Every structure is written in structure tokens, then in C-alpha cells.
Image (cartoon, rainbow, N blue to C red):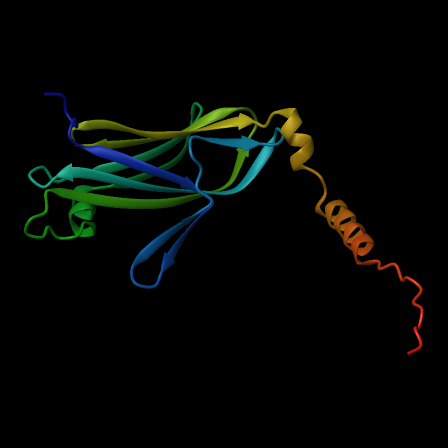
Length: 178
């Protein structure tokens, strides 16, 4: 049997991760499979990555290392030695079939100089588990010219149009004697 065959990694790429009341997490601006950048180079102010790693209860993690790669560069690494892994995981409840570990991280000021991929790789004591990837592509020029219209110009045009609609033509009225 292939090692890590019944262990899974799920990744959410988004603009922000918010911790809500009631122990909830909200993901803002989630990316599907790709991110479109308008020009190169592009500095991405923030990219949040939320990783869930799952294993059967019978085989708890002994160690976890999370690596994030952009192209050939490793841009983040989180290492969790065995004592940290066992302490950070929620205790197993009766009836549970899987143990899950959640890791969230934020990449700040990520410089994108060309189309590439951001990949997540989790290494356990049994080997590597490949997570999802986010493809970074250059926005097509037809979309680019539409997307980069200055908001002030759009707002000015909308105001002129609204003002034109509000103009009421007064018609002369004739009083009728009774």
C-alpha cells in the first residue's frame, strides 16, 4: 500500500481569513483554480492559505511540515515537531474516524514577476502529500483595458448620466376657465 494513500490535504487560497464569533472561520475572496494579475511585475499585498490535513484515527500524525512554493522558490515553511502536533490536535471523540489538523498562513507582499503556480506540499512521517495549487496567469489584454478603467472616470460618467435623466422638461400649462 502506498504511504499516505488515506491521508488528504485540502487547500483554500483567499484574500483574507476571518475568525468569527462562535469558533467559526470565514474565507473572503476565494480563488478557484487561478488568479489573474493585470500586469507584471505585480505585488500581491496579501494571499491567505488555509490548509486542512486529514488522517485516519488509527494513524495519528507524528510530525507535519507545510511548504508553500511559488514556481521554484519556497516562500513559506511551517514545521511542527511531534510534541507540537499531538498538543495542537483536538482530542479524538468517540465515533470519530479521522483526525484533522488546520493550518492558516498569510503571505505578505508576494512579488509576481511572471505567470507561475503556488503549490502546497505537506510532509508527514510517512512522506509527502501534494495539496492543491493556484495558477497565476496574466490577464488577457481585452479584459485588462476594461478592468483598469479609473473609478473616478466611471463615477463621473455615471453622475452625468444620472443628471441627464433627472432633467425634467416643463410643458406650458393652460388654465381652463370653468
